Amino acid sequence: MMNEKAKDEILSKKGFKFEVEFEGGENVPIVFANNLFVRHEEDMFIITFAQAHGPYIVKPTMEQLKQVGKVPSQVVARIAVSPLRMKEFLNALIGNYEQFIKMKTESV
Image (cartoon, rainbow, N blue to C red; front, side):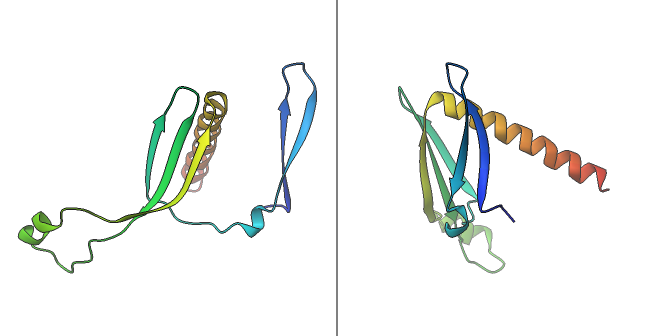
């Protein structure tokens, strides 16, 4: 469970230390995304998270699968970040993923 106010420390360009409190996170629903798309423009990255559904066919035949065409994917969030924040985001993802893998391998 996340604390009421998650804390993150950042350094400004002049070396001052600020504490940033993320408030209200507990009130934002957590949605599942099994599909994502990332694109970039000159000054930002846009990340789209979505839920892909179906097709709902029980024991599909090869012919049924050939007829599917498109799989619906409902967008659940779109986030735009600066290149600097994108780099920080990637570093945070990599570090967190490495901790996850380490925890999983140690528990075996």
